[in-house]
Length: 216
Ligand SMILES: [Fe+2]
Image 1: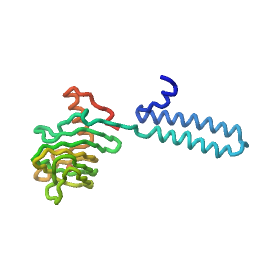
Image 2: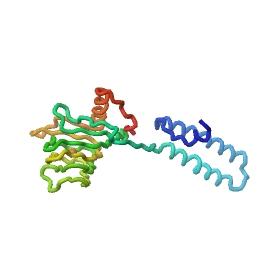
Image 3: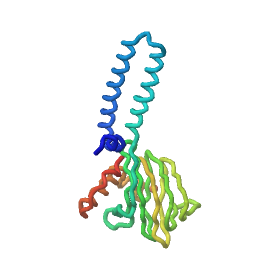
Image 4: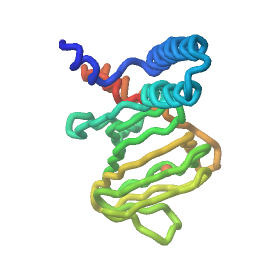
């Protein structure tokens, strides 16, 4: 590969490696520029030039090196993973697992005429955009139709009910989902780690390669 080509290749190494590389580079440039100033103490505007050099070449490069790389996925190439244990009423297509914040994004599919377990979103909000079908939360005065955007604050407790059509909704979730029984006792919980485990287990079981690029 030509040297010019190498330079425009995206840096897709692990963030820790990129930070280490950028820090090392920062030190070497800093040392070189510092020595330039020391060797030329009377050169006009040397200090200003030195600072500009540091900002333009070093700080910006460091920031760019820590920026997340672009990710593009075709949902047709991602599997519908069963969400429930036992009787499966829901499936998801994983789109992102952000382990640094505990936030995950998935397309969620629910069969028609189902009542999902009542649950609380502890420590994270719910952002949803409904794509297909209609659903509602028990006791609320609104219905999610195709094109409906939903925000639910952390702590929201709800029971999702679908109607006569299969539902597909894009959800961005944080924290955990705590499931209740009829006595308000917590009987189960999901969070980014359990959802990621469902995805990994399904891939292992069906021979699908885990898309590690979904974790960023
Ligand atoms: Fe929910």
